[in-house]
Length: 144
Figure 1: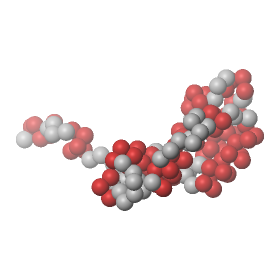
Figure 2: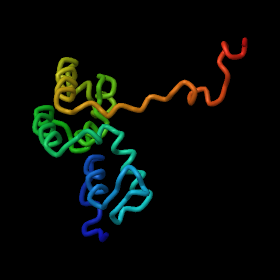
Figure 3: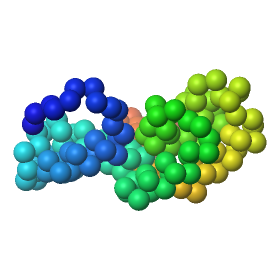
Figure 4: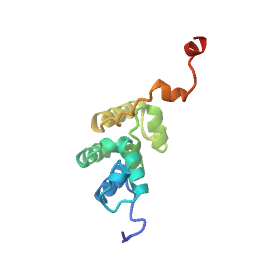
């Protein structure tokens, strides 16, 4: 791959995931049929399990149109897409000078727009109790 224009712009996690998919990356690095390396497959696997894993081009386009009314910078829109905030605290961490730029009702409206536009992140697999204890005995097992 050849870089045509270095630092041309920032990419969202969804765009990176889409690029890796086009290079043949899969969640199974051994099943990769394209020119994707093992590390690219690992990055792809991580991104599929992040909020980017549930996005589509149409959803991103719709979000960007709806986000225009909140006067966010490009970097802020990118962070919202990548992180999908669900609380006011997260919004305040992403948006610079949020207290000055948005009232609390505007933050609530923004969160509602994010919730209605961006799908929830993929569910994390449940870890079984045995794996969490990592071989440790429960109190009941010690008594027996």
